[in-house]
Image 1: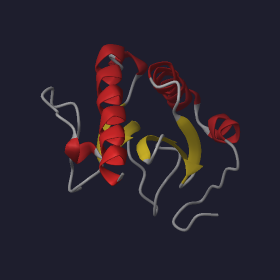
Image 2: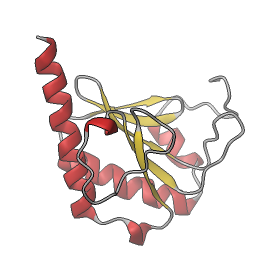
Image 3: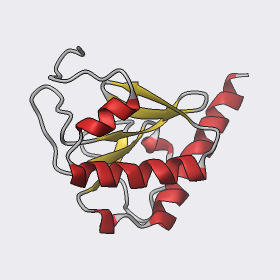
Image 4: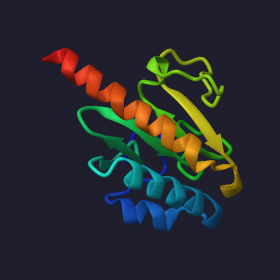
Length: 136
């Protein structure tokens, strides 16, 4: 079990089965967009939530049902691990007190504007490519 968490999952399916239906439906919608937009992306559980990567972590989905250190947020977070490098002309991302990881919170399925999410996913993908090419 991961420190600060009361749950532990071995597989994404186990994680999805654990979620209350409203959260699960939001997560399934976002996962579908991620895989449809970025077909080469890899999904892996980390901190008991799904992270998506190519060369490095690009984004993640964090749900209220998976607490961190006793803290439970409201809504499903779509987080971008290099959010600080992204253009955010729409003010879509919440920076909070964080320097690098920026997020957007979905509390209902109807808040999901696929065209906006796809645009941010594609930008995150391109940032990952640039970071990898800069390493070579």
